[in-house]
Image 1: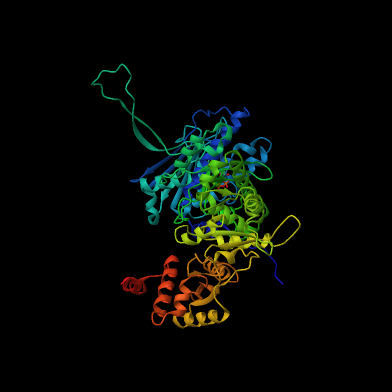
Image 2: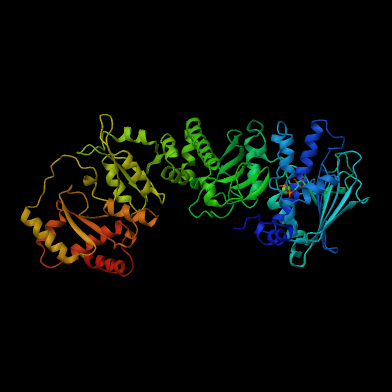
Length: 635
Ligand code: ADP
Ligand code: MG
């Protein structure tokens, strides 16, 4: 048996880096600017410790495009490198000076915000360049400036240079033929705004003109003076890096506009995240106004690590139901060099998701407690997130019991407990269930809502697409009868005739004999289509409508649940439309139908069509027929 070590030589590594290391070539710029930022932050840190004489005033990073020379320059005034450091950190692939710095200064540098980690970032420049040069001068006094050059083959040159006078590093990329897009100003500017917009050291890209304001005593035909200033592309101290106590409401709003320049709608409120144990995380989340046609792919939560933009795909990190929110989270502790499925199983990441959920719940709870009126006003715009969260996250569900609201068609808002308390006397049925009535559309279900209100019942307005799942869950959790608790049932107002929705013990008196009832049922069934309607005779108030169409609660709910994706109900959405036709045997029309010679069919069709009309079911040719028939009957 032969044994040995696999030899990973640089010859093998270069093409690998070029092809596979990063699928996105554009990230080379993010990596170079991260290194330049690290070098600047390190110098600042050393200055604080009194370990350097180099100047740290006004540190800046500059990006320059030399289109003619086909070169891209990234220049910093950071720590620079000695000859030995170039040999160690640059020539040895996968050796990170960032890691070493953190290890050496571990007591003080934790909060310095150093980005580097794996010692591979620098080599990503070979994805777009066929030759890379480094000019560098260490901040350590007496060290020579060095020039390193490499054309992508494993051979490099390293020599003293007198081209570099100031402390810091200049990286020069000779852009390859297949990557000339990175010689375009607009492309570089786009990348800087995408990845570096909130990095901690100012980044200069070209210059721009600024008009100075005129002094107050200026001549009336004086021209305002124009000056050329550095074009700084980033905001080095974005709101999330500050303390909540230093920020006003307006600061949060203006940061929102900075994050999403194309969003014109203001956010409803924000949540400032800030923890340093057991993991590091800062950020600001915003609740946007959620409309049903929200584009979830656009303007998503952005993930940063030490102020470097990483991605706006936070799947696996932020719980699903909170991905409708906007804002930023910044955490150096999220392992991103792993697959998404691994991410979801990672302990630290799970804790992050739990923390975010808790913060959101706490914020909602305090908004509800401190200003209920405002909270009620916002309810419609935020309910989707809360309802979705209650369905998918048991902990959130528990917390949300305190602030989840049930609005009525009359614009009253109850919590679940308040609601039960309010309706328990009138809306308890003969089997001791509390029956909560709801409508999904106040206009379409108007006549049913009126019937319920006439009895003094409260009618909720529950109109989100996932509401059938949610009430199913509520019923399940409140199914048991105990000394201080009654089971809770939900019923949509049009799912049965009102007296059947909340059944009381009262005996109903019928005007028809059993014989007459049988005959009536027979006649009606001959006329109405059997596949669609189940005829159901009821002795109701004689003033109530003769025919009422209802959709059984169970059928409708299962169907809705299968449409919005619920386990176990697949295929239900293909079920044919089925309705109950409730016939009020006490309405005078029934006598007419029984006694009429001709016309029987006309009466039945007319009453059926009127019932369909109030359920918004009468359309097209059938509506035309109905109108014709109505005119005929008037003659
Ligand atoms: P990482 O940043 O993960 O440590 P890189 O491959 O990006 O890995 O860089 C390797 C090392 O090279 C850095 O840790 C740092 O020590 C050194 N280095 C790279 N760029 C610069 C720079 N602009 N100034 C000073 N040192 C640098
Ligand atoms: Mg790096």
